[in-house]
Length: 345
Image (cartoon, rainbow, N blue to C red; front, side, top):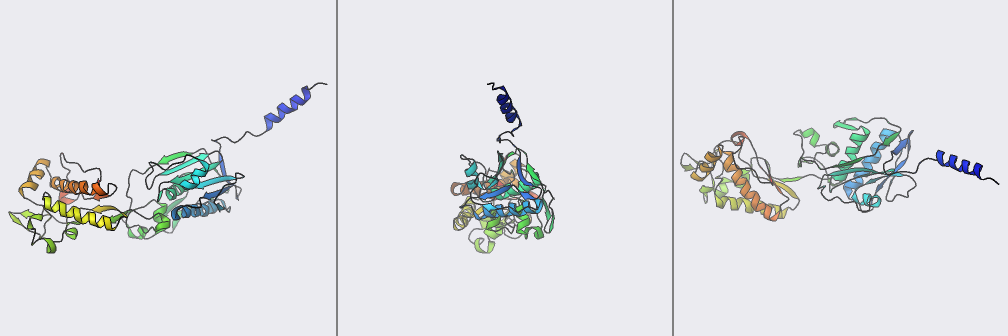
């Protein structure tokens, strides 16, 4: 008995069967208004990561018209979106957030699954919103104004994105936006004035604000005992419409002590301000003038001062940034002195 017909049938069946899933295949999230994926968030996920999963469920539902489940494990029977680093570890065993910092993101398709994760506390939220923006087309223009597309069928092409924002502190100078925590987190605003609670990833916590000299070194507390800590103008030490003497070592140590104590008491602080008063009156003493003449700008003594304090802070908290201003008389940059790596200017 010949086996050729059976062999021919076997070959034909092989040719018409669909190919096995590959690691770079297109993922289907929804088809004709029906969900084709579940959202996976780990049992021990942070509050922010759970909120990220809920936001993904909400907006995918608005876009596709489908209902999506948020689960803690994927059974392998359906496509899955893994949200957060712990969930990502269920799909990518060696997954790590090393190098992502607090806000860095990773978006990656793995076969018919998708991983959206990032550093803590905000990275996973930003991964979800970046996916919704770049791959789905969502936009949140202003509080109460958004564009959410209608796509009953939603697929994702092979995707691999790893991004760490180059600008660490992001905040628009407009109060009505900052008061809306949802708008802030969806647009990756993480500044200290943004009304973002823990489930929205919190914010970079600042201590103080601009023009901090007399806030931290108030003349009514220090001038009588330490007039040398204040500007010398026309040969006299004064605190009236003046600044601080930014080369005085005793002042540098006292300012550093104040900030160190503040940071110890509030370990959540990410940055502190050391910045000039909102007027002129920079110090004309011999030491300050020597630096300013050499650098060609009164910003010379200012950067010298801020750098010295930043060096002291770095010994205890290298992660804390020291904020200062290039403003008015300090705007022209020094010829040689540059801000330290932990100074934001």
